[in-house]
Length: 308
Length: 291
Image (cartoon, rainbow over all chains, first blue to last red; front, side):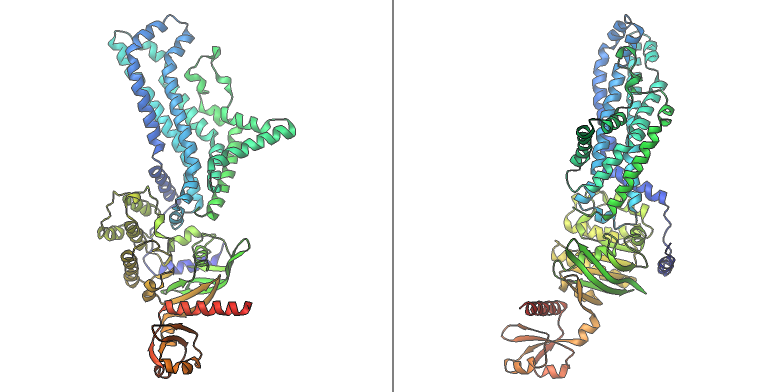
């Protein structure tokens, strides 16, 4: 590297008390923490959704004993769907909140700091653009899914315990409930879906949104949406094909083959039981490479962009 | 050693030339005022120095290349763009926690001691503070960073005179406590001139004047000329002439004091007077050239 400049910088620092050494990991940790301070919706939104859902669920417990009795007349598969339904709805609601929070977070990540000029303060501190971009990418790829996962598991656990108590109170055995909502399996499904699928499989979406946020001087939402739509249209008109749209659709929806027979809505529809299944898809690794490219572009953009 | 070494520093935005080949050296321990009209290139020059903008030419700041090593540079340098850039959602205590977490030269105890002298509470959010208090907070943070180089770009813009004075007084006190190098760009020449050791005038991307304050004091004289001696005074080649109350005020460079005393009342001009004189003589010359 540039030897002479390093020597000079050293001679400067030697003239006074040696500064504290700060490791890159510590800088990254504090940068992520800073994001959590700024964006409290990362944990407040799932908590609010869980709270609202639980209020509704507790009220519905009045009719629980009747419902379980009625379900016993159904076939095993239908029974499972009927009993699992509230657990699935809880998971889907928290998932919607999670995706919304992640998209809003990404679009504002580099746009907001330029709009309120605070980028001038952040850039006056010894934190590199790379560290900043990594810390902001960790939020939607890791932190938001983990928070949603924790909120989902906690909500379903509260539901299960409250339901068992109600059933026991009305002289019924909660065994049917526990048989149809196997807690360990459900947790694994939630982990696979929220953390691996929404976090790592969706990473290219977040990378794209972060890059647009670093680039756009106004309306980052439109800039995030319009180019992919335009590419899809051009491809359709020019070649009468839809490969680009297919790639996006595949990335967004995965394969819908995991629906249970009979089209019943159960927790199993949220994906394979094992996160390992996701991790062995080559598409996952291609997606991560694409994400890295978007994030690299975001680093370059953040370096050259100033307040707007 | 030189803390800032610029050689042929140039920056263009499309067809607009913001910096037109600047050569500048700032030695350790100097306080340099960068003064110029709007659009002179002050902010562009400072942005290049702290690594916010790419440039052509040579530039080393505290021995580093600012554009490619901004984060390392910021361990030794501190930058206030203006005081309104602190993130509004942040709590005072969070700002201190964060700085301890990421800045190797941040002294939390010192920041807290400085804040204790103000009415700012640690639980307050920046958005709840008045503009003057935000300034105090930013200043406390910057003063608690043991930086070699402090770069200020119009730091007191939009503040009332009390806070502006307080800001520069604190800066000066801090400067005497330990050897710091400061570069400050401002319009408010009168408020900084008593703390400067050097002054640079910038006009249309070029340095048009560069003197130490000792040179300014020893070489420049302003004379309120008696009306009957005006012809004799003009014969001494004043660099500028303006109308005072009832008398013409002429500015001379390098003319003997005794000689001038015979013409009227002699005083040392302020930086603002010099600035006006040099800028208007440039404008006249430019107009003369186009006619």
